[in-house]
Amino acid sequence: MSAVLQLIRQRFSPSPAGDIDQKTSSMIRAIPGSSHLVLDSPHSGTDYPADFSPSCDMDVLRRAEDTHVDRLYAFAPALGIAWVEALFPRSYLDVNRSLHEIDPHLLAAPWPIPTSMDAGMLSKVKLGKGLIWRCTDDGTPIYSRKLTEREVFGRIDRCWTPYHAAVAEAIECAHARHGYSIHVNCHSMPSVADRFATDFPGLEHSDFVVGNRDETTSSAALGQAICAHLRSLGFSVSYNHPYKGAELVRRYSDPASHRHSVQLEINRRLYMNELTLEISSSFGIFQEALLSLIELLLRTDTRSMP
Ligand SMILES: [Zn+2]
Image 1: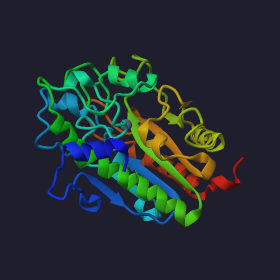
Image 2 (image 1 turned 180 degrees about the horizontal axis):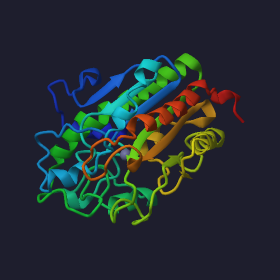
Image 3 (image 1 turned 135 degrees about the horizontal axis):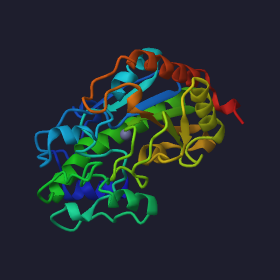
Image 4 (image 1 turned 90 degrees about the vertical axis):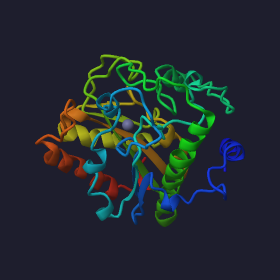
C-alpha cells in the first residue's frame, strides 16, 4: 500500500476493520477476462451518491459524464476482455487523477497529503479538474460549501481505492496469463472543448484522440497502429493532443515489460446527442467500427511489434 493510502487509513478508518473488500464494492463493476486485453471506463458512472450534495443543476453536472461509454463497449466481456467500470459519477471523484491532485480551495482545512508539483497535474487542478472537481467544463461551481477532510477521504476509500485495485488486478492477471497486456482506458469527449475543459478552449475535437503520454505508456508501434486503424476506417484521429492520457495509463503501464496502456477518447457526436444525452441512430454502426479496433487489439501481440 502506498504511503498516501497508509496516511488516509491512519487518519480516517471507514469501517471497524479499516479495510475494504474491493470485490463487494457497490461503486464499481469489475468483470474478469481471459485475454491479454483490459478495458476500463472511469467516467461513465451515473449513480449519484446521497452524500454528494452539489449546488449546481443536475443537467449541468451530467455533462461531465462520459455518457454511454459503458454501452459502447458492452460487447467486451463476451470476448474474454476484462472490464472495469466506475458506477459513481466523475464529478463526485475523478479516478483518473492522482491523490496528489487536490484543489486546496475546495477544503475547509489544510489537506494533509502533499499536492503535486507536476506542471500538467497543476494545470488540471487550476481548471477545477483535480481529484475532486471544483467546477464543470463551462465553469459552473459544483459546491456552495467547503468539503471536509473526512468527506474527501471517504470518497477516496469508497471509490478511488477499489477502482484502482480492480484495474491493477485485471492488468496483472492478463499479463500473468499471456506475458503481455494491452490496457485501453476508455473515454468520450465533447465535440468542442468548453472553457474549463482543457488548456485549449474552443478546440474542435477530432473523431478520436489516442493518448499514450507521448509514447511512454505504450510502445510507439502500438499507439501508431491504433491511429492507423481508425484512420483506415475514415475517422479523423489526433495523437497525444489535446489529451495525452492521465493517471490510469501512467500508473499501471510499463512498455519495457510489455504492459501497454493507451487512452482512447471518442467524440460524443459520433454516437449521441450532446444536449439531450440520448444515443443517436448511428450508435450501432459506430459500435461496429469500435469493435473492429478491439478485434485488432485482440489479434495483436505487442512482443512481435517493433
Ligand atoms: Zn473521460
